[in-house]
Image (tube, rainbow, N blue to C red; front, side, top):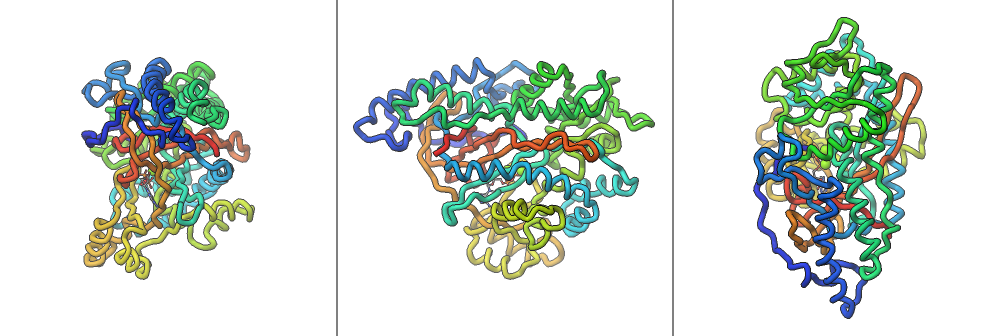
Length: 499
Ligand code: ADP
Ligand code: MG
Ligand code: MG
């Protein structure tokens, strides 16, 4: 997701030496002093660890930090301690990854389904309409993607009302933080090796996290399937990206482990420097592209002019492997998530009954707004719902009073405007007091956490080359904020400690 945060909100700053023992659950008050002392020491050690291990982002205080690598770095915001997470739910989430990977692939092959399910959205959402236009063009020429690469992240929260693991969404484009997420797990493991005893936390209970190397492996193997030694991976990026080091971790692994070169280009550069040869080869700046990996292109702001749309269409028309293809991208929309949750829809795409049951168990309530009863219920009790447009990257959902006002307004407009949104059951994770570190300062706040499980899928025609769960990302946010963007300044990167 993008990394252009608004100005930070003022928050209560806690001198970590005086930090309460509540931060380390299960520690008796008599032991509070050594705990507070340990936490205070840990803040500085952790910040140093980030600096020497590349757990860094561009600093918004430096205007060049989003453009020039190596300039204006600051440690990524992180939680000082890993988030406690029950082992059973952890296993459940990991098990779902390969099933969701397969589901995305199956749904992507059903172009008619995607077009039909999104047809009403298309009338009212210009951005989705543009994506659908590209998809329709590919259908018209019967474009086949033999090599299909998916790098996904399925996000979950633990709902305290129902005591269940529920999916928030499935990201099929630009799934962020595989690089930095792996590092946070390492940071926490390092800290707990030293301080675990006094904190009553065992470093061995932090699951290993290979998201960065596994995503690089998937990209490397997709590159190998394309079978052209002189070809490169094209990473499509935003012109300004403060989360570039997360991306460079993949670039680095690709080079070191697979000898594969990555070039970074914006959509505008792709349009200016790129062409598709008559045999379908994508050439950018004179280099053949084996794999297009999108870390941009998921938001309307990524397409400020027609040039960017021409670039997207050109890449789609080429024979390069696209991560994601236009079909994979569309499968990740909120509307498709809601359609897949309808009765008997999963059955159209998957055969294994147990797999279907596992997926369905993770689905929260999801509704289209042509359901008048639900719209009425949401107007009456807006706090039990989230209203979602077809957008990615955080900060787009509508809650509470705004949700009620919006629904009333949309109803009055009549027409199709309701079709731009879906309604989702609001999930209520249990809040806990957590020390968060941002800009070298430690703050204690009531937080809730969202677990993302990465999945990689690669196939070439009938051969499934990879279908893996590959690491995880915990994001912890202040519970008073509705949206949990790390980039947006309300959340921090975190890891998991199994309980
Ligand atoms: P995006 O694609 O923009 O990330 P999400 O569906 O992930 O959209 O929503 C953004 C954030 O909103 C989530 O990270 C989560 O914090 C919050 N959120 C989304 N859906 C729900 C829900 N059903 N219940 C509670 N919080 C939610
Ligand atoms: Mg998303
Ligand atoms: Mg999300």
